[in-house]
Image 1: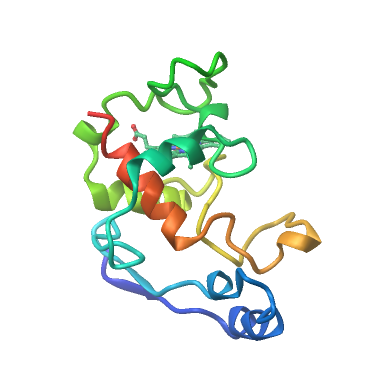
Image 2 (image 1 turned 180 degrees about the vertical axis):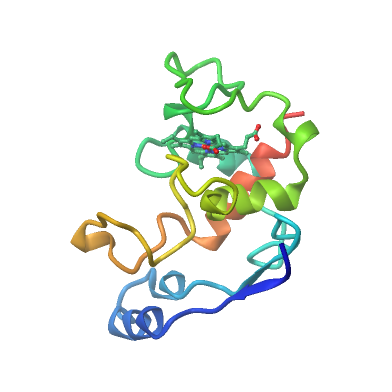
Length: 153
Ligand code: HEC
């Protein structure tokens, strides 16, 4: 795969303006990122994420909800889904950049995957009205999840 740049469409910009009274407004506009060799090499925020916050997001049913599909080393949570691969040891199999792209937009690896794209604001087939044009998570939350996932050695 060659270098591909994703830019924000006009829709995101318009929504960003329309929602400028909202505290989350800065998050409506996706940051630009570059996909190269199946990875997003650099942090979406330019900073490393917080692994402890990432762990919370992975548990949170309304945020990452990673546990719904993945086994993870989070023993205090009784139910771990097994639809996706066990994430124990994933940081030994994949690089940080590969993990980042998988969380941002896993369709880059498998068009038919059921794993949601957590940082995308277009191309959803059945977006609820209140979620239209908004990514599921912010760039900072993606980085927190990347930081946590990188601890799964
Ligand atoms: C609806 C189910 C679902 C949810 C929710 C989900 N995933 Fe996944 N994930 C999958 C599936 C299925 C795969 C296997 C890849 C595929 O579908 O091609 C996968 C693959 C992955 C991989 C690559 C694993 C490997 O060994 O190659 C990573 C990393 C990952 N997911 C992280 C996450 C994180 C972090 C979250 C939470 C933010 C999450 N996933 C939420 C279903 C899910």
